[in-house]
Length: 219
Image (cartoon, rainbow, N blue to C red; front, side, top):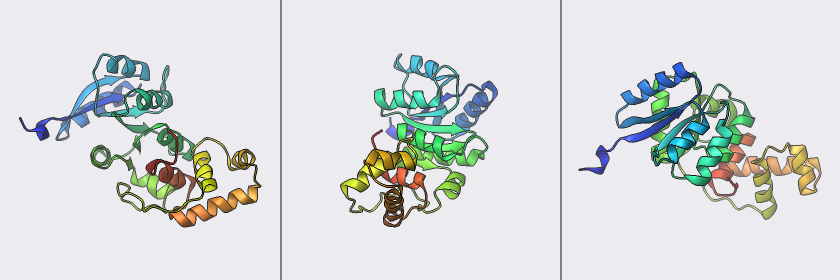
């Protein structure tokens, strides 16, 4: 039997029953995809996976009771790093996106996207190991190339710049980063602006994405 005939197995975790059922029906209609299981919380996903029901991709809601998306993606990244997580949310704020990517999500989409974009996101994560919706890319990371699957060119960075990038991947404010590095707020601004220029990005999320893709950030 040809290996290509095997369908990509998807787990759907969302506490909204109607949305979850609609997503399951939609994904089942995609060529080469099958829904392995549905769950309404991270706890249910954890129980399924520990019973050796391991999907290729998990479509994961960020805000859920009991065990939310943050805790779930952290657990998956630690225990089943082969499982690719596509975060699903109503929120497009920078903090939520950064936190999910930092914890190990391979992509981030909004709940109001078109069905075609969901298929594109799933395909991109399987083929390129990363996806952000065009809306989020355009809104927050306009300085990055659209094709996020291509590896970045290596840029020479100092130890201090790498330290700054690691701290940018945390939930610390720029003021907190200045205090932690024992430097002035102006110096932090200089680090940020120099890295914007070096890495060809225009936002904090762009810095985070570069750090994650190049193994600088700790996930």
